[in-house]
Image (cartoon, rainbow, N blue to C red; front, side, top):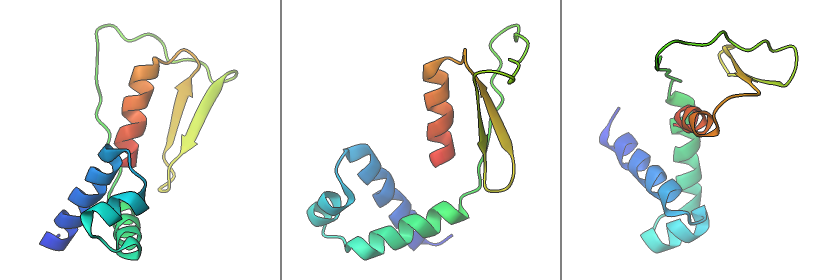
Length: 100
């Protein structure tokens, strides 16, 4: 990865944190909209999905996904099953990690 990749990763992260639309952010930063979209797409395709196992004491039995279960199928074929009783904050953290 070169410095261009790093530059655009920083710009994309700054836009996401700003809460501004891409158009507004690019205008304020003096960036070209098509370049921003190109780099965002390119970098998302390059970034592998990473997971971390976090243990918080005794783990309960995984929920049965026969009812009220969400299953995400990732581009490489991995499956992430989310039970109905999942903590909303934990789910947000996982989804944010998947976006990076």
